[in-house]
Length: 149
Ligand code: CA2
Image (cartoon, rainbow, N blue to C red):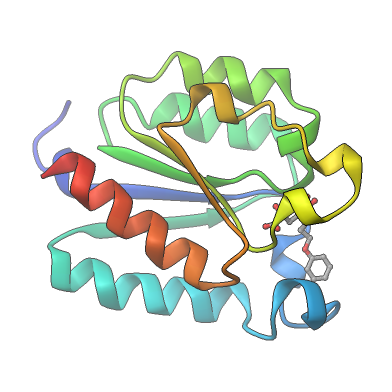
């Protein structure tokens, strides 16, 4: 781990999460991804962390960012979006990094369609937080902080 990396938390967002706040507010809330990022930075500063907040629609880019977290971050908070339910590649990448991983979802995936009940990400995660809207991200940051301190 490089100097200072113990204070970095990587927050990764998967496909279509850049659309937050524009459609389906009844499922995902009315906040944008940028609102969520700002709220996380506020709490992270209080807790003494830097947040590296990213979104991609590309599975390959997400896998690359997970691989790069080795040596530069101390924990990963991941909302893999629809890749949660499809991606063995993201699971494999997560299993190769040795740091706390918190799986995050805005919606309660277990109250939704059956295909959303299975997560490929969960076996690599310390825990899963879902169903609390944008507050899921805040709860995930608090959970990572508890694990790290
Ligand atoms: O609840 C979550 O956070 C999800 O990870 C969101 C994914 C969904 O595929 C997962 O099952 C649960 C979808 C994100 C798409 O977000 C949009 C937001 C506004 C408009 C369109 C898509």
